[in-house]
Image (cartoon, rainbow, N blue to C red):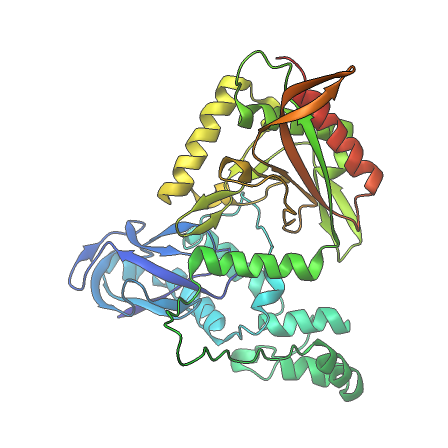
Length: 413
């Protein structure tokens, strides 16, 4: 009998929600065959079977939220799988370590965007790589975060947890009581008070799940880690020969803005106090769905002409609304676009999601009365709202970027 535990799916969260099972108790499944679909921060991830065998127990049902490392499914293994069991035993051992780790610091990794070159989570290649690297200094995530903040070196340290796992208490003991206590007191957040609606109200409690929960955590990360500032202006579209493709034109204008000010297509590394300028322009598109906000990433805007740009934009929006967008298409944006004007609104203060440093919002195009060369005219104008992280982007860089965006949008073609 083998128990498979939910692996770390790379979204920076401590749990996932089971959407649907592809198997039932008594079914036979082959290794790497789709076993179930789970929903993480913003993606639906298919989890493959790690072995070949017979399903003997399912430890969760659709709609359940389970923590990383918690038991997920039990198998009776085939002879071939039993013969290859040392690798599986190593994976099980690593999963037990994950299950033992505390989730107290899960908030410290909100906004982290793992590299899209990572092996697919749950695969044997993924597990073998992560098992090997985890043997250097095994510690719970909270202990690692605390060790970084206190300057404690974990290498060579033996923990008091199961199998020598380093715990928060071990780190605090190594750091010394005075420094650890003062740092822990300063870092301890106040627990929010429970809300009690008025008894005469008719209410419905909706726990935040999946997209809305991820949005709440991302916005909290932005509030805590970004020095936000927003500038506003309008692009005059009266020289356009026709209605035009607003989204494609805005993306082209973003490219012009980044060419003028490359510092807005960047990540900010707060730990190293440095910004990482990125040549590739991968734009995260804020898409509104009934389940909440989702941000698929349009890759390599700098290399796409109008037609393929439009086709890829439509594909990503459909995938976002159908919830078929791939996990790798939700990671590692370098700039963000919020086209809220398709619904309503003129200006806004779009929220920068770290580690990116800027987001452009476009409002509803309107007919405005203008004074032009001594005459009163009516022009179509697009409102623009640019939010940026003022820690690494100066006001001059922001307005020069916005000026380049406006100049491009105001071109006739």
